[in-house]
Image (cartoon, rainbow, N blue to C red; front, side, top):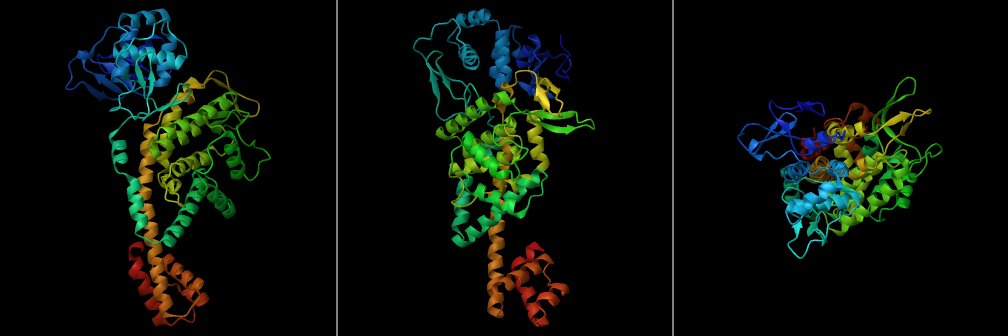
Length: 507
């Protein structure tokens, strides 16, 4: 009896069950993100959390047979397609066929049968089911599912997975995501935009665009020139206009990178890793991207996934997260993956008409404010997968991947990343955008009153307001002597009072 599994000690007297039992049974070293075991005692509820483990009540105890544990996993645990595919590869085909034959119309027999043929692209020696009831593959109360199901006549299954057999995300229908989707944030945008002038919206859009572009470089720890920030901002502003393709990625990549002498534009030809190197230039990877030989197929499948999510009218923010985060997990470029990953959020939201016309949300700015949470989301996905990647160092301080790894980038759970980005979008809509509009509106009112009070060129008035705001509501002696020495003390005091009236909350 196992007392530990994947470096986690089981609760006293508990036994492995479901996916945990199956991985242990087949001796597979595949990281399982949700560990399950069953108690030898009755619990206060059907399941409780005990450290790293979900502990199930003893009344759910099953026979120690592969099929029984598969059925338990699909019924009670979080679906992990990467784990499931590898388990099914090791399930003896004749044994599985016989198990299904015993009762092929049972819901979980149908599901296991479907998953085997769907994931392995291999048919079992079983006849198609006769006319009968179709059952949903995923429980729509537990998972976010496709709005358009694909009926499998052979298995009498409604395939409501978000993706395909080649690339497929899983998203749990958590309370947080239910909350965000029920907010109807698009309505909040329309109401907010409708309360202010179009010119104010255009100015806010310009400021927010620049802010997002700058933040995207800062997230990467890069101090970009003003021209480079502005140029990338222009590209972000065009997001959603051109469908995703390999050539479009190449175009974006070439614009992003100013100096391409040492970097190949487009899909890389070498491996890539995130991490560091020691003093001998030996790589210390925290994560390794997909093998270069797999990139073309992976990106073509990724593009097909984008089209499917669009056609199925999946929630726009969830769609954006799936496409953006799967891209950064694959890491198909030699450099610039992070910035294009964040661009892709804008691309999908613009393509799906989530943004008001001519405006993007400064999601990168919000990410920068929550940079540690953002990194935690990325690491939570990537770090466990490193145990499945065999590699060796190259002479040039890079890595060479020694095993087949493409499935690591095909099947992923992006619930956590969806919650994170939805929170960022909510903050943008409920805080960042209203604050920017209020700031610009206050600035215009201050400008108007000063303009009525004194004859002064536009730029000088705007600079005067900015100087006062930068100095907590007072015009500094240095700035007054240098630029505004002709203002009387009374005029200066009155102008400061006007600024304070509209901007007091900013001091």
